[in-house]
Image 1: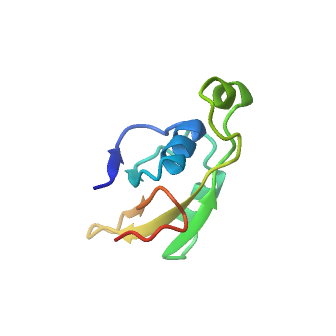
Image 2: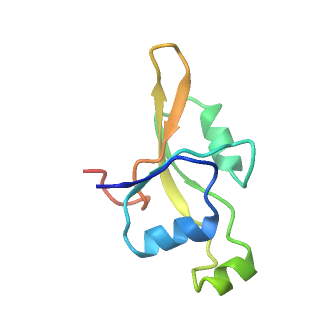
Length: 100
């Protein structure tokens, strides 16, 4: 069962930690804050899904938590709600990992 992250925009080091531990996760993130430029581009596009890379963790954060300093890549999926609102889901912790 995936871990549900339902608040705010988790730090890049946390995304790296979940990926390094092969933890499946679904995340809702706030595109008004954090380094989600690629996600904002995806939202304004028309592709049904994509693999996006967010900004790398701050070097002190990665070092303090002994995590990878690399920018994490995740898979995002577009959903159009019945009211026409666009929702974007991140169905898995690894961009290359199947969702089932």
